[in-house]
Amino acid sequence: MTTFSLLTVALLATAQGPQSQVAPVPDHPDTLAVAVHRFADDSARLADARLVFRLSPDLPAGDRRFLVTEDTVRHRARAVEVSDAYEMRLRIHRYASYTMIPLFALQSVAGNQLYQADKSGAEKPGWAKGTHVAGAVGLAALFTVNTVTGVWNLWESRSNETGRTKRWIHSLLLLGSDACFVYSGVSAGDAKNSQQTRDNHRNVSYAGMASALVGYAIMLVGNH
Image 1 (cartoon, rainbow, N blue to C red):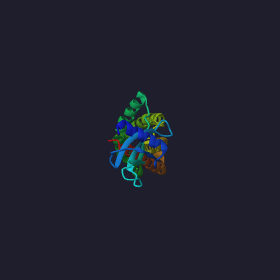
Image 2 (image 1 turned 120 degrees about the horizontal axis):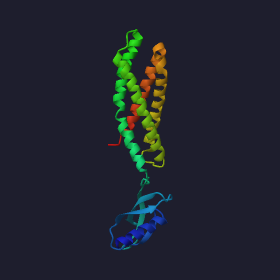
Image 3 (image 1 turned 180 degrees about the vertical axis):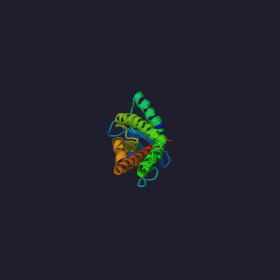
Image 4 (image 1 turned 60 degrees about the vertical axis):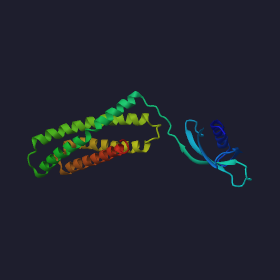
């Protein structure tokens, strides 16, 4: 039987069901696997069905009719188109993210110096004050840019099922970080007047950093 005939038999058997009996196939091996394509219920998806032809054990000698069984079925991912602007935003988002860890380290060192000085009543180091302010401005710019580009791309790729869970977890963690850093910025002015406010400022800032780092690590998994 020619390849064309085999594929025709396979397609007919697929339409009949997973246990359909097909026409005689003389002088053919007892088992034959043929990969065919068929449309699933959703016309936007294409299922790969691997049909296995097996010689029926209940037929008389010399009768070479085969039973067709569906061995495996898997769905191909649906192609999703994104704009050129999506790719540009993704690059901006990714490259801006590389500055996050250095900024976190800088803010942690400078902020801790200021925290200890306030707690002990000592004079604040000049370098720590300037560095902490510059780091806060840098983090504000970074998280503004990445929030805009990230949320925009999340919306544009909303129909893409591949990696959707990872993207949503990443986005929620980073939005949580945004909230933490907004609170830290608002409370910074009162931190010098209250130890409780200083504690909250520091703790919430560290919580925002931790959330952002977990979200950052999630997007690194499987991307290399």
